[in-house]
Image (cartoon, rainbow, N blue to C red; front, side, top):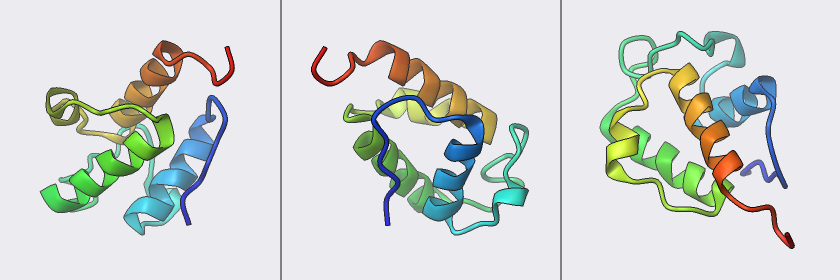
Length: 91
């Protein structure tokens, strides 16, 4: 099940989204959690995560941006930037 939102997610909601997408416990996801070093998220799983971001945000995630996302905090910051840059539906 993919979490659908109509706007900005809090960090806790974002953490729940990551937990579901990656299949890891929410408690393991802090802003400093490193996807590769701490969670052993391989490149295929990262691609899946980026695809989920694209579905969530309704926008394309560039490969350059994806390479910059190393931690949960990086991912949340990226999400926040995209939400702010994307006009609200019906606006």
